[in-house]
Image (cartoon, rainbow, N blue to C red; front, side, top):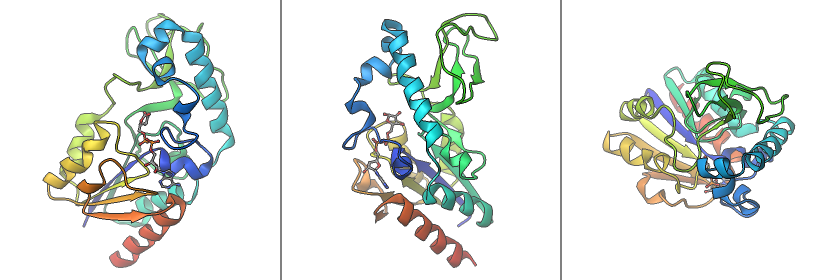
Length: 234
Ligand code: APR
């Protein structure tokens, strides 16, 4: 087993103090998703969307990676083969936990995107988002958070499919399996002959598609699984 592809969702960051989207107290419970996470919502009320993302960005400055993020960084460093992390999370906690080459399929909270020309650039957490900042490439405005919203195409899908079709093991961690295309990755990996493992607090919408399951909080289950993989490899 040489190549592992890991897909992560909001559940891996839950124990860092970031709300998940669909669980109790989930992020969408306090806001209508169509207001704050769709292009139409932004067109209707850009200030409300900017305020929502400034709130999320402020929260992200207060949180730290947890043992699950740390364990995946350890796996990347010690495994020997290739370990690719694909995340739906926009929180940057994988990088802060020491991971490299993370594929951010739903964008990043510390980036901006120009709707007019598609230019993407960094916007560090220390700075506030506003509606006045023009695109540094084409000068258009207003610019928006570089987060993939509902109805939009995730980033890097070709690259991800190439990784999935060449992997020996596909692992999904902390994702409810409600949002496609990520929820369909297990099928691609399975059809291509990979072993598949789901690590989650509870059954997801696509659990039946995985060959194996580990249930429990990511901060406990992921480090134990990594330890297991590394000791079997030694
Ligand atoms: N450890 C492991 N799993 C957990 C934990 C935990 N501590 N806490 C919650 N979970 C699980 C939940 O049981 C749930 O199945 O994590 C999953 C989180 O699911 P969602 O909130 O739906 O998050 P996610 O699957 O990442 O959402 C996908 O939807 O809203 C969009 O773009 C957004 O990237 C997001 C996408």
